[in-house]
Amino acid sequence: MRKLVLLMCCFVLTMYTFNISLFAEDTTASREQPSINEQPVVSEAGDENPVVDTSETDEFDDDYEDIDYVDVSMDTTFVKDSLPSYNRAVFTFNDKLYYYFFRPLSKGYKTVVPEVARLGVRNFFTNVRMPGRFFNCIFQGKFKGAGTELTRLIINSTIGGAGFTDPAKKYFHLDIQDEDFGQTLGHYDVGAGSFLELPLMGPSNLRDAFGLLVDTVLDPVTLLTFVSPYATIGTKGYIAINDISIDKGDTYEGLVEQAIDPYIAIQDAYTQNRAKKIKE
Image 1 (cartoon, rainbow, N blue to C red):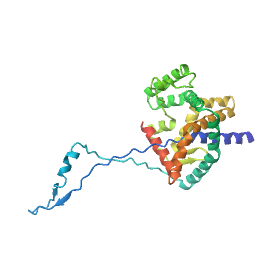
Image 2: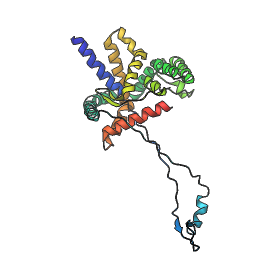
Image 3: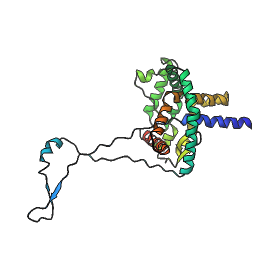
Image 4: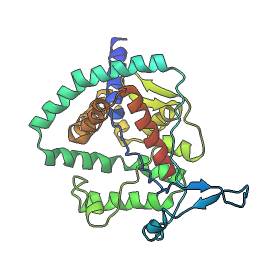
């Protein structure tokens, strides 16, 4: 029983670091349509329809004649939050855990391990975890993306030195197809459901929480469970710490430290990022 409890604790800690990867996307800037103040003037004939006096704006005609006027619309993200009090409490717990545990750990790791080695580790595990991205491309009918992932695996596993470098992107311009099962469900119009801040795991929603279970099955690292459950947990934890030391930690800190309400900032960034990925 003690071993089971220990395994469960290690698992949730690992999943937290795995999900700390937040992608704060820049909101598309809206362009203002130029406008000219027009003064309505009633004609001497007493017409009911006002006549626009453009005498003061004639000199600006040349400046605006080449401008194409378009309708401006802004994308608004609506987040269903059925458990705000619970989610805020869990967010506070996760935030403290990050700053007092995971942040010092990742910074110590960053000090000891050179950046080139950390980038190599990330490339290696990105290459190893190709099956999840490959099958989710298939599930979504993105066969070109699936082919890209397969080609990347072959190139990076050979001339890329077992995946420690990424010549597929550098020389062949083959980008990673960042697909997961949560996106697959969204592709088929499965709603996100309520926002959910998971203890030790970070921001999610009902759809993505279920998708995470499927992605865990598709992850080759999970196969290490047959060797030892500690091997899988340790490997995933190491991958997460390595990623945080490169850029994920800076992304999280930059987002929450500049926000008036960090909880809303994280919620909005997560929701917008997931919606954007599903549309792609």
